[in-house]
Amino acid sequence: MNHDTYDNAYIAGILNSVKTIAMVGASANDVRPSYFVLKYLLAKGFSVFPINPGQAGKEILGRTVYARLADLPEPVDMVDVFRGSAAVPGVVDEVLRLDPLPKVVWMQLGVRHDEAAARAEAAGIKVVMNRCPKIEYGKLSGEIGWTGVNSGVLSSKKPIMRSGFQSFGVRQK
Image (tube, rainbow, N blue to C red; front, side, top):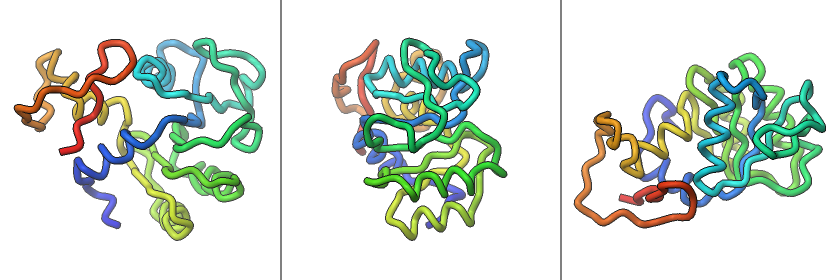
């Protein structure tokens, strides 16, 4: 797959199918990007499990923090990687040991590792690199336009309401 660009339908399909997310590199520091992405995803109705060995056993935004993916109490649909690109192979190793496998490995803005992505895809896992689910959700739902940002997505369709704070859900097309 070409990971330089993604079709909106590919991203929308992922965001509409995912319910549970493990966020590797979640931070308890409320000025860190992972903190406000975690907060946003929770507000949109996703169940998010923070992964951070230094915070294991504590809580971030009311969610118990786990040291590693293997410690999760239930399977997840997506693993969101908030770590540097050099850490991605190790995270993918952990992902590939999970049973069942998640549907998606998502690497945050600035995070890319083509070899690790190829290994995940060979196991049947969809991969997104150098993107943020918060930004993509806002773009595809039309919410980002509320602040005057051009999302590049035009639609005359009525938004589909989804649970969560001011959530219109992600449009399929």
